[in-house]
Length: 137
Length: 432
Image 1 (cartoon, rainbow over the protein chains, first blue to last red):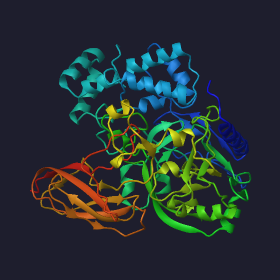
Image 2 (image 1 turned 135 degrees about the vertical axis):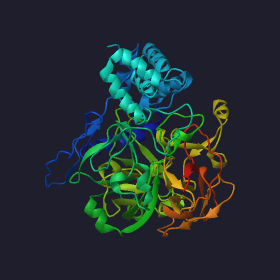
Image 3 (image 1 turned 90 degrees about the horizontal axis):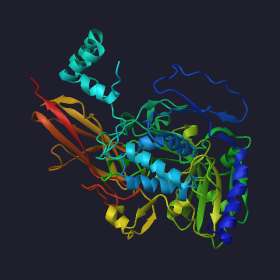
Image 4 (image 1 turned 90 degrees about the vertical axis):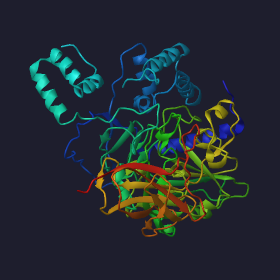
């Protein structure tokens, strides 16, 4: 594991204290599963209170369809830890090399804890369904 | 009944042979329905993705979705939220708050802000660390208001060739608003920046599930204290005369006129004065451009590791045709008005030119009201097409520094700085 320098620790401590402070100021990361194309019209009214809280409720989640195949559940569960797997669908078809770089970035840069064997299964799934040659949906 | 993949089914419906094949599978009732659809022209759905070629559309491909405080926008991702503004909203110089695009980096985005708890904290290498409630901030400093374009660094990324990973924006990851707030410089002055300081860092209320110190935990952006843009920066609580929508950074966001939106930190909670350059992921690894003319390079150079990079900064000059849209048909010999917008992060747009012959000849467009150096500037061009057939329209802008849009696109691995001349085909029909 990489050792933190003194300065990084100081920065980390600063960020941590700031993060603790930020916690009280807002509610975050609130999402609710919805269906695409099924918008409530008119939208349900939220009961508003006259205190200092400003809320827009939870954000809609639209779970996309993924092709069946080995690795599907690993992909949807590991990726879903930090972002919706819709991120995969948004990308243009990418080569295996590009997908490998994405998986590596998630592990090495963003700290996703995916065992190496699972990384390979995930990469194989992405290659089987999301390259210029294989992508269908 | 055997299942047919939806895509293939749609394709089949558009051809007689397909309808015949379908009849054998589904029986006469289904055939009747299919045939009536085919007779009117099969419905062509927007595809689920584009590539490996460039995105052929003006906007990103995606479903239209409704979010709190927002009009229906184009969905790129739902967690965290990324939404694109549809084209028609750019007919006016100001982008309505409800239509303004949305881009967050970390999944923990605020859905509730408690102003009883929220404080803007100014800390780090300052003489007097400060904390402000919203009313304190509003009462202590002068209010300033100006128009400025906010454009995502990755706007138009889907036109890159070869394609690069990242948010596959069309052209709608931009907007223009009248921002009202206090000057960052006054707030920093109140805290007293101590000698030896080099940068000022911004952090919002958003947070990710990653471990501390990683880019997946905090989104942090910094500007050099020596950068003259600091004197122009605002801490804004108002956008087009209203509080910011939560998705656009309620209660307060940084406004860095002329700069890409990555520095315009939303739901701002903390300003830190740093003694050492910020080395967090969002400065050191992300949002960097090749240190080359126009920030362009090649996949080969990137692979060879020979590309030196610098943090992204000002927005290159751009212009867009907003109307007519590409599926319109106009009669030959009848007057038309082409409309669009232009802007530059380097100062006022001084000239917009339009070509109706694919860039062989150009004529000046009439500029709309000057709403400020960093605002959208609308333009209009009276055009009477002389002959039937397909015409290629093009638009190019020049700014007051003499920067002019180039013919060629750029390429860099981040998918940033797209600003080539926009073109659009339009059909001209017979008038009688």
